Image 1: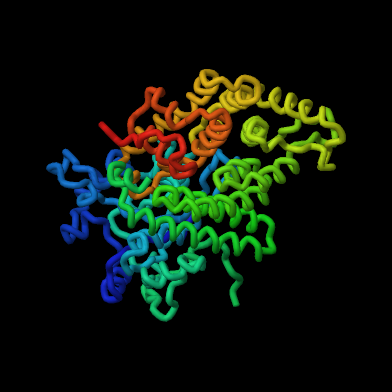
Image 2 (image 1 turned 180 degrees about the vertical axis):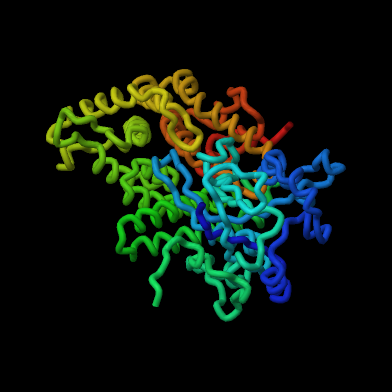
Amino acid sequence: MIIQQTLKGISGIDAAAARKLLAEGIPCNLVQRRGFISFAEIPSRLSLRNLDWHQNQYNTPDPLEGNEPFSWHTPFISTTAGTVERFISTSTNVTTPAWIEALDFATSSFTADGYIFYCYLWVVGRQTVKHQALSEELRELNVYTGFSPVQPEGEITAKVIIPPVQIERAEFWSASDAFDAVKNELLPAADPVQTIVNPLFVDPAYYNNVRLALA
Amino acid sequence: MKELLADLGFDLELVGRACTIQRGIGSAYLKMASEEGSSSRRHDYLEFGASCLRKAASHAILIDDQSLSQSLFNRCAEAYAQLNRPYALMMWVLGKSQDSAGRYFREIWHLPDDRERPILAGLREQYSYSLLFLSASEHIGDKIDFNEAQIGFREPSQEDYVRQRVESELEAAAASPTGLLGIPVIHYVNLARTLRDDRTEGAILENLFPFIATYDLAVRTAKAKSEHWRALRLPFHPVEPDILAVVSLVNDVLSSQDISLSKLLNDYPIASDSRAILQAALRARYGDSDNSPPVFRTA
């Protein structure tokens, strides 16, 4: 198993909402809309069909949900870990950093303020769609072999809720500051003063397999 | 081009913002590359930065900022040249920097020290661009001067020898996909030969067709992903530089014979959107000198 750092951009939320997510976890849209889902319902929601719709037909009316947008009912939570993309035109592999992808979501393409949440998800290098605790590496073509035009977004998909213990911090990003930076050909940066550290987070280094000698 | 944006489903403000974002991030990464000590990381920064600038330059075409587009394509070309990728030639073509392209071409178009070694080992498909560039350049008054005491050229006949070797090695990889749209290498070879040996309108149209048909298919497919198409989140760009560079090289050859490629595009059985984008891109790039009427989306 790999403990994978991922980033989750959420736009249009303020500091209070960010603190609430750190304290209670980041829920999927289904939980957010309903408040909860029963344990009995989770297995049927975690299906390959829903995962495919989450990736490729996110806002499409879903006939299984009374033609409401699939996104309203998704049990999945998108995050990104960046990706390496084959660029055949130049015979190169292009690495897209996770923070750039997350920033686009966090600021709705530099139009709204938002937060980037630094999370740690568990992945095992194969499809585990029925296991709520494990995340799906949609970016990994050797695991999810079907073609998706949005594969370069570098998605790692969590399920139902990302617990507070797995969320390290939330970085505030001002859309106008970020846009001013790129206009001046500079990389945008988060304001460290406004970063919220999560006291409930447990450093995943605790779970690694290095056992220190007794001191 | 701007007048087409709404019909194609694009928002002018969104495209402009995307252009600024990609330009800013790409430029910042190229600057980081120039300051980076680790060669591996420098390589990564160059690739990512160039990729961003390529997108920004394409976005700039959509918003009719030709000057910005050319400047960005040229910066992109410099980065690809640093990565030793002949694709830089196509970027310089789009940046209208024939001199820079010519200089770079002379650096890469030579025999290996060991005459038995394949010329294209490792980067074979990349030489599709070099071959096409050479063939197109010969007919527009920019013939590459190999007597400039450049690397590896002691006599003019070497040029043909290298060309034959390159063609032969590319033919051996005839079906290998090249470029973002995966067009087989053989189509680059065929088009290059046509531009060199048979500049008739019919032959050129025939050998350009695989590029136009593939582009047309890509536009139709991409538009079906309407949300990603409108947000410019697909790897394929509406004014795909891979195709626009080829079309520009062909247009340069044809216009030297007073033939309008823009008009000839009307003869291809492709979707009106695909045709309208290509014709608008050509108009933006070369002006309205051919007096062809704008073709707008009809279906």
